[in-house]
Length: 151
Image 1 (spheres, rainbow, N blue to C red):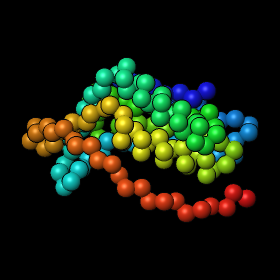
Image 2: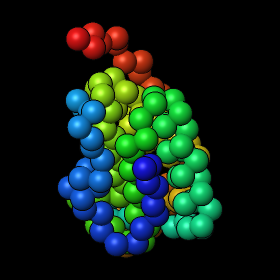
Image 3: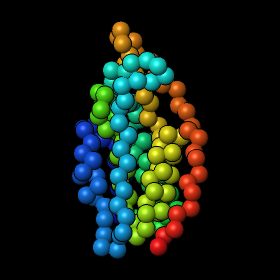
Image 4: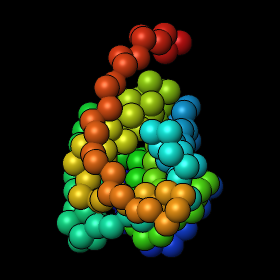
């Protein structure tokens, strides 16, 4: 039941989270990426995400399927928004449910990091003074999670 969508309408995080879950699961996790009001010391008024939507949908589906194979749960939903967004709006939502929390966290982290690296979505930020600039892609440095007892 994995779901991957590129959307133009606002994302409802509660609906994304409600799309996962099973009586088998002891963990349900929701990650949201939100438009923030600053970047590199500059005030941000909003952003625009552009994409070749068909390609982005295929890549997002591949990323979600890789997460399914990685952690062994198919209860994963990833939604990325395109278009004009204002500060505070959700740009990406990822929900995962699994029998244990470690798998849910691993799948969510994998998906957001792969989105940042591979998803053909481009971001233009609007700064004070009507200045707009495309944001250069950056691969974040992942900090390894410490091992957690599953008991």
